Structure formats: C-alpha cells, structure tokens
Image (cartoon, rainbow over all chains, first blue to last red; front, side):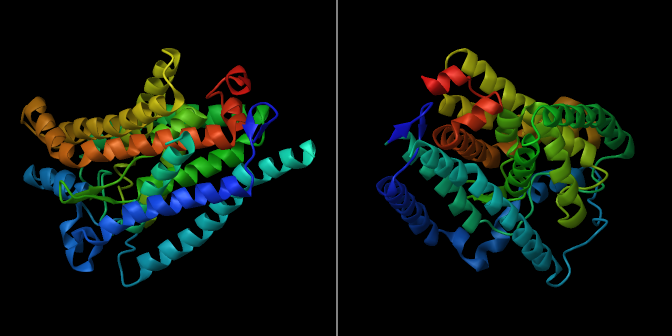
Length: 114
Length: 251
C-alpha cells in the first residue's frame, strides 16, 4: 500500500512478510555459523584481531611495542561491566530513536490519511 | 527478491556477525606504536577537519534542530560498528567494519569525521581500542579518508545515474578499503626507521588484504542495505539529509 509522496505504509500482512523474511535469513545465516569453529569458545584464540596480527606484529618487528592503555579496563569483569553499561545506555538511546525514525512517522501518516 | 528482502538479508547478516563476534580487538593503531613526531603530524592533520565538522554540525543544526538527534544516532552506529570484531574464516583473523561510509553518505563527510573522532576517543579511553597518542592517526584514516572516500564514490556514482543500493555498496567498500590503505601508510611511515617506505607499505597492505577484502564487501553490503532500507522506510529523511532529491522520492 502506498500513499502521499510515495511513502509506503505497511499493513499487518506486510509486517508479517518482513518478519518471515528476517527469520528465514536468520536461520540461513545462523545454521552454518553454528557448525563453524568461530562459534566455539575454545577456538577464540584463533581469531586474533588485525591490530595484533598485522599492526602490532609489524611494529614489533621494527622495534615499536604497544603501550598499556591509560585506562585499562581489561581487569576482572570490568570490561564486561563497561559493555553492559554502554549496551544499556546505547540500547535505550538506539531503541528510542529507531522508534522515532521508523514507526512514529508511519503512524502519523496513517492518522492524517484516515 | 525485492529490495526489502535484500535489506532484510543485509541487516540479518549484520545481526549474525554481531552474535558471533569474538572478543578480540581490531584495526586501530594501538597506544605507543607511532613515534611522537608522526603522532603529532597526524594530530595536526586531523584537527582542521574536526573543527570543520563542528562548524558544519552547528550550521546544520541552526537550519534544523532535529538534525542533532540524527547525528547522535549516527555516532552510536559508528561506535558500535567500529568496535565490532567480525571473524573472517578465510584468514583466521578478525577485524571490524568502519561505518564511516554510511555516516558520510547520510550526514556528510565533515560531520562524519566529527562522529568518528568522538567514537574513537571513547574506544581509546575505555576499551583499549586504539590509543590516545594515536587518536589523530586513527581519525585521519577512519574519519577523514574513510568518510571522504565513501562519500565521493557514492556521490560520483549517483551522478552517473547508478542506483542507490549499488552506489551505497561501492561507497561502503571505498570507505573500508580507504581506511586500511591509510592505516598502512601511517604505520609504514611511522615504524620504518631507516628502511625505504614503499616495500614496508606494500608488506603491511598485503597483510591486511586477506581480512579486509571480504570485510570491505560485507561493509559495502551493510551500507547499501541501510541506505536502501532508509529509502523504503523514511525517504523524507534522505531528502532532508540531501542524499536524494525530493523529485526522486515523489516519482
């Protein structure tokens, strides 16, 4: 269904179709991932970042070592806590603006056209 | 497969990579790697761009105050994307996309540089992801080069009449690969000592390729998918951000 200035507003069937395609895509991507080594905790060491495998390695070869960060959050569960805090704050902010971005405008258009 | 489904698949890829992201760090140049004079040079290069970004944001916010929440949202997106390690099974390593291509396409390259500077500062302070002494170099590679590369490629392709999704895809790739190309320049020039620059530069660039080649394509798909999704859901936002013309949306 489309209305006003080419902006499309979905009905419940459209939303369901989109959810279904999301679910299918999720299954499509997650199933193979479940059987790849990246999903197992024991293989975590394998996946070094390119900062270690390229940047720091090359720098070490040329006599430059990375220094300890000024604020070291890699102590106990501190990093986990920082991620939790940042995730909670970021999640609420992102959720709030996502609603503003995609849902409210569509419902306003629906109301105004009704 | 219609555009909505393509967008859904791109976003699902992003969600899947988030779910399976490992805890390793990635690309930014770590604390203390660059000698003082090189770190200072990259700072000196980054500062004018960040200042121009602040000026541009203020000018845009004076025209329309609602631009600021959008920039805040983009900052959150760039922060999340650029500290999200994605495993690359073909290379056995992991790295992260940059998000600066998407930000530059949507809010312009100057504001995107400002967004990147803020995201990199938080990562350097709290996540040991990059460093404070290498902040300037990271702003230049990811912010300045990443943003302008993505924006120029996107705008250039749009002027040639290329579709929104394909132009976004190419813009995302350009931003990602441009960032790592610049990181190679920064690293080679900083650590080479008396060695010639070019052989070391190629060595670093070649070491990045197995990881960044597929990751750049992922970033392109993500950028194209996001731009197309926004076009389908909120084309008025793209008009407001001057990504597409109003006549294009009405047609």
